[in-house]
Length: 468
Length: 74
Image 1 (cartoon, each protein chain N blue to C red):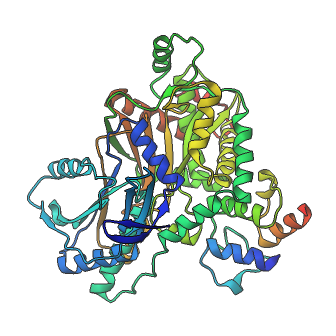
Image 2: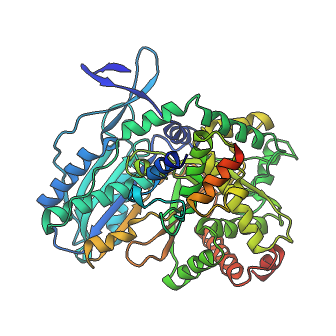
Image 3: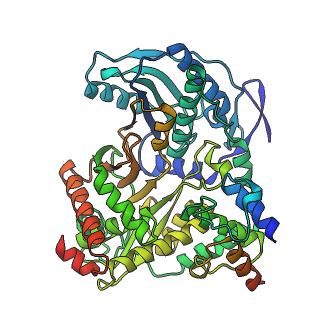
């Protein structure tokens, strides 16, 4: 729909379900206006700043969602998105090479915590930076309504490939896909046959009995909520802490241990994500008096087609992955049940997640901002691991920076490191609800369960819990 | 039906259209992962107007297996 914005006419489109999901978290998660992604990507080489500026400009030109804006119609209150034409930009340069890494991280975390004016203009900021130890690259901060982690990775890959092609006579990367076309595909889904089928599936899920909230710190949080609400039978928890403040702790799993997980998954023809989910699920069971009914929020990238892999934007949906398992279930059966539940979610993942969460709250009379999952999980196989080939042995590192806000109780991301392929586990948590020691405890038990399970695939959940 | 399925497959993986045959294995030959396969099946369900049983469909390892499954559902 054509709209006049600031004297210019733009083709405007409604926000997608993935964008609305993100914006709902800003509201329900009391994260203020901060829903940002901060990332840094650095090469250990002398940098040609002019070439990097050129590469960044070309990458922004090729990536429509980097030029996406959000506009609220002052007359109707309706919210729209549109893409502005590319304009050459001057990216500032910051030299932190004489600083220590900790201090640089502190500054970049602070920048990541600065809110964008959602309805007022640009929703991203890129600067060129030099770090200690000869690493140079760019820091990138973007509102989550524009990009998700998959598109940040695709954008980063594009910048690096363009930079290398400018300087080292390497092939120029293939074009990115259109973001607006992906929005149009999402619009076409509304009212389609596929949406009808997905709706039938999710309605069937909603017709089941009420799930149970299992907190990653144990049953104390739910007990307190029951006391506060004077409801001894309450089964739901809350997404938000009162201040929305958060922190992220990163744990690096060594390469050998990562390989054990990958080989186990390959041997039994199981997805790595289901193996890790099994470990998280079993820990939640253990920490909550061996509860059989566990719900984890499963994040789905929705980037399976070639066009969706390279279109930028935010496409991530999340859905409750609920499994009910008796304690005599074996490890392999547990992972297979999780895989089955995950496969069903993948097939029906285009459905609006807010309708699912809203449907659950309405059916069971839960408060606004309620949840049955204390943990959100995402596994990112499509990282920058392959970039090593492009860089021909040049050391490369990527960093994710914290905005200091956490709209959900716990957000675990498993992602392969670009340099050696080992797994990094990012534990984003609400500081009001857990201490760093409790997060360490959670990581420790998740690891114990994971490796005991791999070593004993025919053991029952009860046996694994007793071993750990 | 083969051509329609081929067209769908090409939306998911970057392979030469001529290399897709009935014997092509989704994972080993065409480079699908399990997530991509499930998403493609979600689209195929609507495209071919069939009901998919997730457990049954996972036994389909090749393009020919999947076509036979769809034929059986008609």
